Every structure is written in C-alpha cells, then in structure tokens.
Length: 360
Image 1 (cartoon, rainbow, N blue to C red):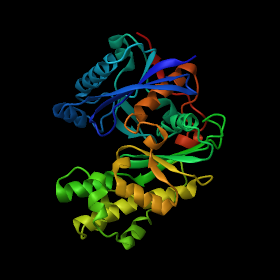
Image 2 (image 1 turned 180 degrees about the vertical axis):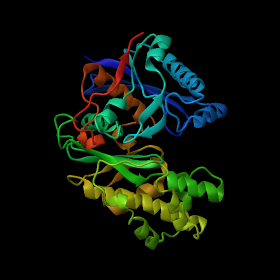
Image 3 (image 1 turned 30 degrees about the vertical axis):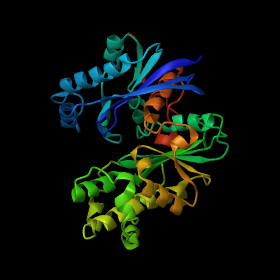
Image 4 (image 1 turned 90 degrees about the vertical axis):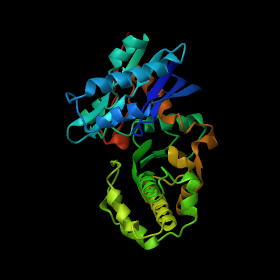
C-alpha cells in the first residue's frame, strides 16, 4: 500500500531542516511530493554547535532537544495529509566502534506534538549489528535508480564536507541482496576546498569553482596525498570531516588560485580512486549535495573517471531534497519491517531494519 511519507533532515551544516514528501510503499517510488526548508537562526546554530561531541546525559541537552524538536514540528506543520514522518534528528556524536551514535530529537515527543506517526532513531540498530550506522541513503539510491529507469550500474555521489558514493546495480531485485549495492566514503568532498577558500578569501566556498578554474593544479601534491592509507582500505569504510584537515598544509605555500585548483583536483582524484572498488564500471556518476554546484569539480571528475558526471537533476531528482526524501522512504520500510542497511552499505553483519515507531 502506498503511503504519504514526510522525511525530515537536519545535517551537519546546521543551516536548517529539509522536509520532503514521497509517496511510496517502501520499495517503489510512486511520486515525489513538495519540499520545504526551515532555517535555523544564527543564535540557534550556536546552540546546536555547543552540543557537538556530547552524548546522552551531557549538560545543556534539554535546550537542544527542545530547539530541534520545535523546529521540526514547524516543518511538519507546513504539510497536509501525511501518513507518517521519518525523523532523522540532529547528529551530535558518531563513534560507531566506540560509544555508538547519537541523534538528538525524541520521535515520541514529536509524534505527540504533531499528531502523526513518527519513525526515528534510524542508526542505532545498525551500529548494534556491527555497522557504521552510515550511510543510510544507499537503499534510497537503489529506489531512485529504479525510478529513473536505469538499466546499467550507476554511481550516486553525495558531495558534502566528505564525499560518499553508492554503486548501484539497478537490475538487482532488492537493495539488501548481495551485489546490489556498495557504499562508502570516497575522501574529502567540499571540506578542504571550503576551509582553504575561507582562510584565504573570507568566502565560505568557491562559487562555481571559479577560483579553481583560474589556478594551476600541482599534481605532485595530489600524488603525495593519495598515499594516505585510507585509499587502500577495502569498503565499506567511513570518515569524519576533519580526518584530512592536515592536508591543508600541503598547499599552504601555493597561491589562492593554485591552492583551490589543487584541492579541487584532489577531491576529484579521490572519486576516481573510489571507482577502483566498484564491482563493475558505471556508465555515469550522478551528484547530489552542495558539491554538485561546483562546475570545476564536476569537470575534473569527468576527466578523471572518463564517464559523464552530472547533477542528479539530470535524471529528474532534486539534489537539495534527496536526503529528506530518503528518510521519508526509509520510514515506510521501517513500518513494513524491511531492511534499511546491509553489509555492502554499512558493514553490518546482516541486513538490518532499524528505526523506532512512535504513534501520537
């Protein structure tokens, strides 16, 4: 039975809450509904930042809980005729091989506030099963590949602070089956480029990759950076945004333009390295996240992978709402008891159906 599900996503950028509706049975996508964005005020972002690194029981979490839940309730109020909500919450800490994972935001309270069934706490069960707890979007990427009519392997690349890729075989019967998916972090996405540009120019990012286009790539620096042991590890594997922060020293002596060009080329090289792990070559890369707007980066990736690299909009998807849509679709799978992750996506021992369901 098709369900009208609303997905909610507040990411590590802490800019606000994406909300998007999907009509689905948790397998097929019948329809993409409307989406919206509810922003955090600058003062609210400071409250969220103060909670980063904290775990349940830490000081000041009640204020953060109320802020997160309240902002998400505002987002839900903008939609009508919802059957259920997929509520990701706000990640404060993630240590899958240590203390676990912590997304603040109580779904039972949100269900009471909004008067609608809420599916939440998506990641804990995967971590308990030996997985990384991330990424969870790959199962949705599988559904998107089916929806778009793909008939050959395709790669979905999300370029946030870190890059992560999902290799999809759209001919597979289900996403949890062996060989259907492979997902892992490729390396730095926008983080190094953004941090470099901010430190040199005061701008938050290299708009359209214009600064990088004006510079010269120093290939010797890229060769050294690719010697990092992460690139030799077999996936599934994952990173933190700061894992490569010291690589900024590799370009500290370069001009603004050359530094931006070299770091942009390094991100592209990381993507090309990732393709070595694919079970079969892909015919195209589809890019979502903020990095899809960096045209210089897309061109460099296309040159290194030797296949077309396009924003997901090229197949009719919404690159701004894809993650929120993913949690709408995943919510229906949780309701049906279907898997939401598998060994090939998070490293869990077996396919896992995560998430808790709270009713108003």
